[in-house]
Length: 124
Image (cartoon, rainbow, N blue to C red; front, side, top):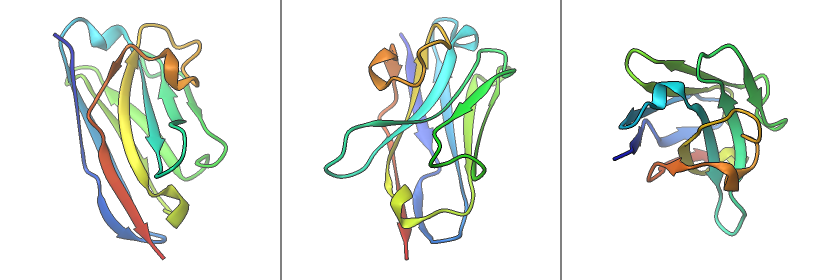
């Protein structure tokens, strides 16, 4: 059974930083592409960042480029999202998700497995 568990969310002031973690278990998720997506109140779920199974390639939404960094540790089957220079518009529930193939990872509906989400709130 696949399980993805996010942690690290919280309340932070604008300009601050947070590091999200996603611990994965089950199947062979070390061979899966992983992504972070988010959903703000009243908005559609949107892509934030993705990483290939081996960590060689990454992709970011334009809104977070230069501020967020996705990484993974396959020995621990854990994916991270380092978020710097946070803005109030980054406030959302952040989800970790897994997809067999990296191609198409920008589409929220393309993911096979999802975590329960962690709340990130950025105050102005």
